[in-house]
Each structure stands twice: as structure tokens, then as C-alpha cells.
Length: 519
Ligand code: DQQ
Image (cartoon, rainbow, N blue to C red; front, side, top):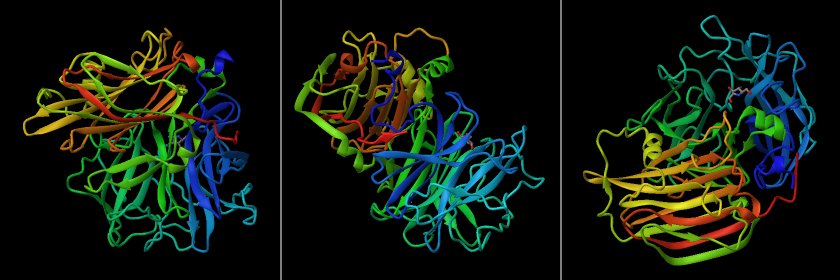
């Protein structure tokens, strides 16, 4: 065991060394999934950015091929930043990406096309001479002009993908939200769970606009309508647009990008998690950043939010399994889940409770939009009424270290408010400056009529990705335990509320490493 590598993940996508950030241009083409990503070939910190490239038949086993796009031309010689893939009519993939043209980080939009469409891996990408395709006019800040999203076939702007006409007004704006990084704009089906190709504009369709806001490092989305005549996106009237809006993930999840997968008729979302340790730690371990497990996204039947769920292919990595049914957790009780490799596991649990009568009142002075603050005050140990209950992941035997993922239910006049937390504050004994251990949290908009709450957590050495209420609220934490590693890690279910909680059903699996994870 290399002590520097205890925090490497087992089944997440990460290269053997160096820095990675945004997933770029994910696509499916002729039987192969492609993932490109921002990569520094020279070290474990951000810089020297190229588009690294991996290919897969199943989104689980990956093979690295040569870098697809590297700085080489006047229009990208200072960096090849984020962008997207579009499959043009006639089944022709094209990438559009941001090129950095000078030391001031001036940004332009370029395109690249496969050199040889009969190479199944599309290893070589050419940058035609008519680049850059789009440059900023004087109304645009040239250093905040990046991350082109997948194109859709609409009424105007470009007929050939080469000549582009600027719209008279933006697709959408929200004052005071800063630079929108990595926007993603796509349709979702109002009926059923099929994903839609990005160019599907009519029918029973709503649109999603996601932006990554650098100031908070969260991703916010709204669901609304795309008016194709006016070429404007209009968020639904109940949507909160901006800082208080819905987030894809209430933890460490950024610069995500979705794509339509025609092989399984679904929309798949890739997100990146950076490290939460100190930069010096990254340099020492020689790597930084992971791609999170791809998620299928569908519209919740309420139409009010999206649901995210790990792609079904992940289940092929499930090994040994344990199952519990009808275990009662009294106030203060903790139950260990044994028999699997809990540092590299997939856990699904359904909790139930007999009554909501003991739910604590929701103090009207608390900020309905600041779940994280509430979680940092209440934590997993402050006794409540209904909850806190949930899982203690990556726990050391005597709980010197643990990352709890849990719910706490409040009463607010005629309804209940469900708080979900993934709390890294006690995740590591390492006493280092520069580490980030927040009490990430979000509210879960769930109907409690059946008095049940479900939770799924993907645990992988230094990452815990959690899905509350079948993907209504998702929270990802990066943690760096010193004791709770490998076979010294423990997993518990717990209840610190006065109301007794039942584990209706808990299934947990050891997760295998993919056979091929060759980066
Ligand atoms: N990362 C890229 C940018 C993008 C940012 C540069 C988001 O294109 O805005 O590596 O993480």
C-alpha cells in the first residue's frame, strides 16, 4: 500500500496522474462513448490545459487515447478550455471549444473535426484553418467568453456550423450572477423518462438551463420553455433563478456537461469534483480531480425539479452484498453494516418512521435557502425529533473520523421540511491548513405521506456521492480520512432523533474496480 495513494478512488474516473477538471464534449458515436476532459499533462495543479480523451463501450471501462486537442495554433496556443460536442446531421461529430490566444486569457471559440471518421475511437482531431469561428465583439468581455454548449438545430445563427450570426439578445440573463461558466441547455420530456436529443424543440418538452457560478462553485438550474420564435429561454414561473435556485448537487460537483445517449435513449450528466485537500497534498500525491459517476437525468413527475440517478451500468461493478430488513434504530442507536468493503461501496437504504409528530418546528428566522448553515449548526449529533438519521460513511472504529449523510425533518405550519446533509467536518483527523470540510446540505422536496425516506451513497475512498429521495437532492463530499481507510473503514446506520427510525431495507455492495481503467 502506497500511503500517498490511500485517497485514490477505486471505481471513479481518474487518470493515473496529474490534474483534471471539467468533463468536455461527452458524446456517443457509432457504438462508442467518448469523454474528453480538461487535463494538465505537466502536473497536479491547474495549467497547460489540453483536452485529454478516453473511450468506452459501457461508460464504466475506459481506455485512454491520445489527447484530442492541444495548444498548437495562434487561436489556442495558450490553452484549450472547455467546450462541447455536437453530432451534426449526417452523423458528423464536431467539437466546439474555447481557445486562449494570449497571456491575458483572451478567449475565442474554435472547432475541431475528426480526421478519420472510420477510426472507431476518433483519435485524431483536426482544427480547420477558418478558426476561430467566433470572436468577442466590443460589447463582450473577452476574458469571460467561453465554454460553448452543444448546438441545436433551430431557425437561425448558422447554416453550416462555420459562419455564425450573433443573436440580438442573449438566450437568457440574470443580473448579478457573474460569469456563467459551462452553460448546458437541453430539452427534457414532460412524459416518461426517455432523454431527448438536444435539437428536439417541440412536443411535450421543457427545457433546462444550467450554469456553473464561479463565486459559489455550485451549479444552478431552472426548468422552463424555449420560445423558438423569439429565441429566448423563459424559466417556469415557480422557478427561482440565480443564487437561491435549484442545484444539481449541493456539494462538490462543478462544470458538468450532459449528452443525449441514443443507445439507451437517455440524457447522461457528467460532473467534476475537485480535491478538498491542500494544494501541497495534491502535488505530493501527484493527482487532483475526479469525474463523478455519470447520472441519468429525468424530469421529476411534478415538473418542479430534475431527478438524478447513477447510470445503471454502475451496477455491473456490484460484488458482495449484504442486506438488512426491518431493523429498528432507537434514539442514539448505531448499527454497523459489515461484510463488504465499505471504503468502496454502493449503499441503498429506505428509512421509515412511525410518526412525524416529534418533528421540530422550523424556526422562521432560519434561511430557507441556506441549508448548509442549518446543517453546520445541527450536525449529525445534536439530538432532534425526527432525525438526524442516516449513514455514517468512512468512519473509524471509535468515530474519531466519519462523514455522516443524513436527514432531519422539521415542521413548518402545514408542511414538513426535510434537510439532507453530507457533513465533512469530522471526516479527517489530519490537522492541515488549506483543507475544506464543509457541512454540505440541501432541502429535499419530498412527500412524506408514506413516512419513508430513501438514501443512496456511493462511497469510494475519498468521495461520497449521495442521492436523497431517489435523486431529488444530491450531495457530493470529498474527504481524506487517516484512520478510516481500506479495511479499517466502517459503515453505520444511525439515529440521533427521539422518534424511532426503522431500516425498512438496506442493501449494500462491495464495488469492484472496472476491468479497464487505463489512463
Ligand atoms: N474551467 C475551464 C473553463 C471553465 C472552467 C478551464 C470551469 O473553460 O470556465 O479549465 O471549471
